[in-house]
Length: 249
Image (tube, one colour):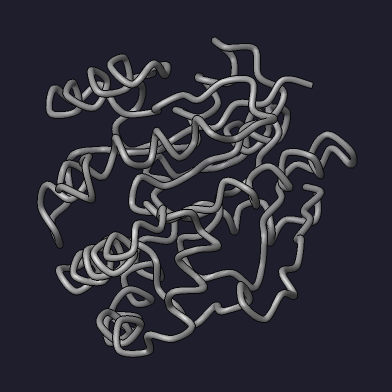
């Protein structure tokens, strides 16, 4: 089985313009994420999946500079973009990671890939982690089928097309470690408060030279409820945005 990790990213944010190019530590957000994804030991490829919009050319250039694969496809239909990347690079499975999620856990993605190889689900996710700490696993066959069945062309929010359709085999792994099982923590970049959260964590870890691995981030936050609180207030607004962006079946 051949698995690729797709970093799904575009330069079109309206709530936090330019967010994927904002500085984070010694890199920008997209560089930070690509370097993290390259550490995944059982992935066959790391692909930056962006669009043909001219604004996204800079992201493809970053992918090349970081030694990963740039792929440019549909502007609005994410599922079509992922399917076409899977076709071109002959991937059996993909793990989709959002470009909003700098602290995504490489270790949990490795576990998703291992589970994909063992049970071959159409869709697989990790539950119990902070928002933004993991990706979504999708089979190439699942992508082919969902692209044939769906009516929507704008697939900004798409996971429910698998989980709410019994024709697809969906699985969920569970995180039970109390240190990591913190779904109330928000680790995704959409609002100024989120950027303040990420920069506060990076600064706090850098003070004693601790690398920002996911486990280190979680250990740090266990004793810093003040930092967790920085962006907690935008959770309701974000949930409303997701509900409004949910694509039709």
